Length: 400
Image (cartoon, rainbow, N blue to C red; front, side, top):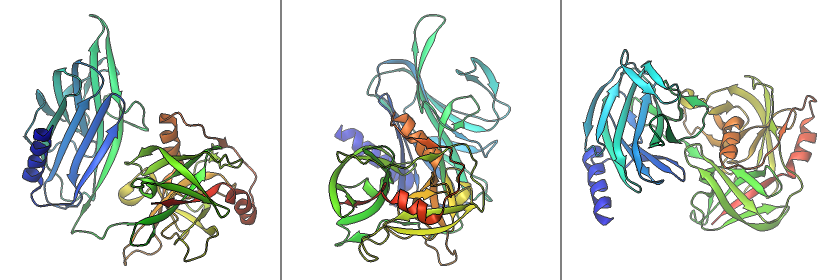
């Protein structure tokens, strides 16, 4: 085990040099783990180096593969390094590839890389490192990721174990994929400012969450992801909470408390969110600086995508502060349309605030079989009435 760790660190140093800003993107299940490593900052005109790692946690497989696709690019120059898969190949139009979903050969529409391993043993991890030349004019790189293990049942049938099992994104072979969006900069940028305030030299942090059923509270992963102890504060009372599930990629987490709450928020059902639509943000910004009570701001949806056209996010004009993270974004019917998660900390940008779309949160809950509720409310409410009703479902989260 120590030897494997040393080898992996050596490969990272070889590929990424002295760059300490390496980002790790993980997708995990009971059967498969996938890790993608890439530099945090990719500068326009530079090459991009990626490490793809997949582990078989299920059982000995006939074969398996890790696929990363680039739907923006038809072709790309690629170099492989330190590959432990049996084969690593790249495809682009007009290449033909087999689809296990369609059970036939399909024509490639965009560039993709596949690493394949025959007779993949349980607990074995496979790695490939690639270096890509990317177009100079792109401002972000989209990467679709998936893994598969194949088990032969008989001569006519095969069993496939996939990761992810379902997603809002589908690749050219018909498989569900997890989408990673990496910004490309002209120079090293100022980073996003996480909306979690710190107290006592960052030993204690606070954020916001809201009940989606009587015991489960939805929030951001960055609010609770590093906590040794989680508490929920409501009406001046503090209750212990435990982390149930987390999604680092989409910055979502679910915590649970034994203190049953009769009130919970519902997700909006049916109506498509529109630019200019009125919204309400509620939460506990800036810890005790602004007082212990819940705070409310109003604004509009300014864009249906986040930074670099991130389709999982929304941009909004309702002001948010550190501590709002994990709080609900409500519509004029009092239903949840997003989860507050960040603001853009850049002197050239004014009032750029971001939320995770509600459908991403529902997918996260669906994957973990968590109960939640939806509402098809057609009656507009006054802001004061929405605040009165929602306040009883929103809590402050304390992380130690």
